[in-house]
Amino acid sequence: MKKPRRPIVLGIVGDSAAGKTTISRGLTHILGVANCTHVCTDDYHKFDRKERAERKISALHPECNYIDIMQLHLERLHYGQPILKPIYDHKDGTLVRPNYVQPEQFVIVEGLLGYATSVLCGFYDVKVYLAPDEEIRALWKIKRDCAKRGYTPEEVRESLRKREYDSANFIRPQKKSADIIVNF
Image 1 (cartoon, rainbow, N blue to C red):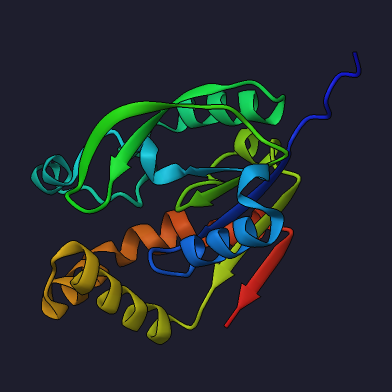
Image 2 (image 1 turned 90 degrees about the vertical axis):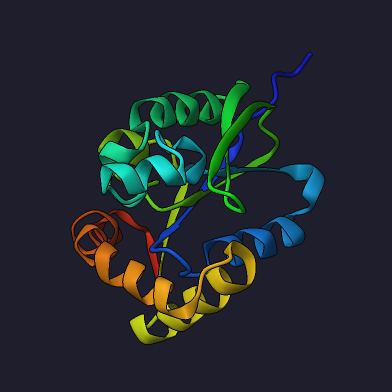
């Protein structure tokens, strides 16, 4: 029996509301749902939304995420092995029961900290960084977070302000690890 090839691992990283999920869904549609495994790195948050607020730490900070487990899981997927992936529910900000994930022909990994370490970067075949204009991204975030997460526009603007340090220090520097930078 011929051994199957390992999956092609595609990374899509960018700041909050940069279009990562939209691009990931589009790629999945083009490549075929049955051919794709989707992994969101937000699922590797250590703390739920309430705990992050209590600790005054943002999801953009590496210390708020299980980067080590993300690395192990990405390595397994890279070599065609399944994982038991945690799940973060964006609707209510909670961590829920993990999901057994079997890699398909394409593994699409999207999220905030996908290129946070050189180890992570080594498991991708293609690394894309989404860098929309900051004013556009802020509008997208306000629209999304108000419609899907129950925030007011003022709360979203305040969140953007509070997260700017982490964005500048942990998210945007990942751009240098990307093979492709998409500006729009």
